[in-house]
Length: 328
Image 1 (cartoon, rainbow, N blue to C red):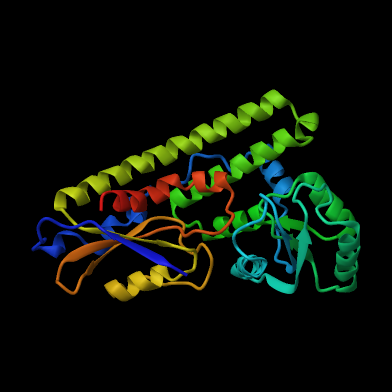
Image 2 (cartoon, rainbow, N blue to C red):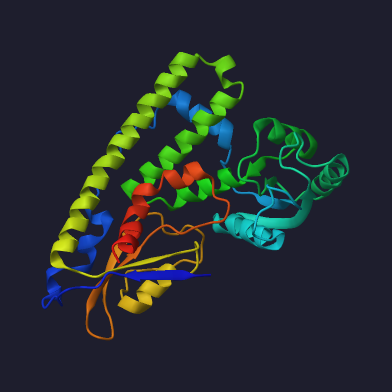
């Protein structure tokens, strides 16, 4: 658990702190009350989402932590830490539970079945002998569909990977317009890539699919760009008022929001013991012991082995923290 603070020094002390009300600088107050222009009634797109995610109910999971023992695919984080993180992801989902956990060593993540025959047979017996297991979560960032299909044939329960679970958490925790748009963009990138890699183009018109993806992406990015412009205006206003900015960044569920609440005494902040409880930027004013008023920035946290394209979709959200660091 860690949190890093970067403080931009103020040239002058703001004598009238009442000029800035606490909710004034929260992004939520600037979001339009209108619904996104992205049509949720696009049946073909929603059918693709359903076919790739299939997360319409809660599950009791067997959590499998595969890990490479040596070589370039070995992660710096230990298998025990990876497994602990995987369990925390499942427990973040409402009414989801962890039935059993296991760690499986691998020589490579590229094997079509992922696991060797002996381990695959062992896992199959484990799943089929426990009726409480309703899904298997393989804590790998992005399982190939052929691998997921093979595992399903053996286990006969839904197969989930890290990307699907994280996306599920994002969709549940996205409450602001900006967060919802960023999650929609991440989901779209996943669906597009999967459709290109697999047999979807054999059953769908490739040109029609490409047009649907392109139009949807353009609409989402256009709305995100509008919100980025609004954030730029807010940052300009803060700079003109010469407020010091403190960016609180760190691992997801490290206690960033709880820390900001302690520093500011802001009652409306309600920290949650969940991964990715915060998906958007919020700004909160507080006083240093010297009496200097500062703005604390709270934003989305980090997670090990998070897919790059997921991070890219949250660039706009991370801008406030990055700018606070680079301008310190």
